[in-house]
Amino acid sequence: MAISLYELSVSSFLQTLGGVDGFLGKGLAHFKEKGIDPNEVVKTRLAADMLPFQFQVVSIVQHSLGAMRGVKAGLFTPPQGGPTDYEGLQKIVAEAREALQALTPDEVNALEGNDMIFQLGERKLPFIVKDFLLTFSLPNFHFHAATAYDILRLKGVPLGKRDYLGRMRLKG
Image 1: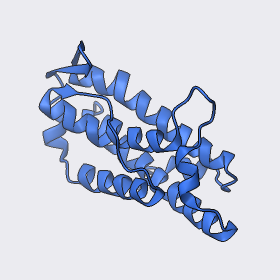
Image 2: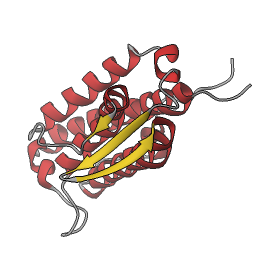
Image 3: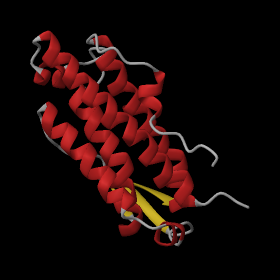
Image 4: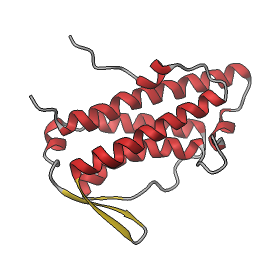
């Protein structure tokens, strides 16, 4: 049996978003325990030329829920703005999980061969939905999730690989 677009995209997004939700929660608990304002991490960068934690979390949502909304509409644009506090970032991750859970395999799989555009300013890149999700959104999604995880590690949050992985889809 072939793997479906839903399994490759939405199921993968949900697994990692579960991990992100969990490691954001562990981060908040760590910061409270240490007497650190969690909003201090929001502007943290791994390197001077990288975007901060806030952008990483907003991008996680944009490249999962935003990607699915984009493929439905036929147009995807990069993230703009978003919450600037830790609690707000946790909230958008939870909302993305909830919205993605409402998608059905049939509605996602029906989009597979559709055309769509990635637009950045005046620049437009044409894609087929499947290729957009597999070659653009999924890699970006994982990049930003790993970067957010790494920033929390940099800030001393005791996380391990299992915190990133989320709930695996085990047999049985």
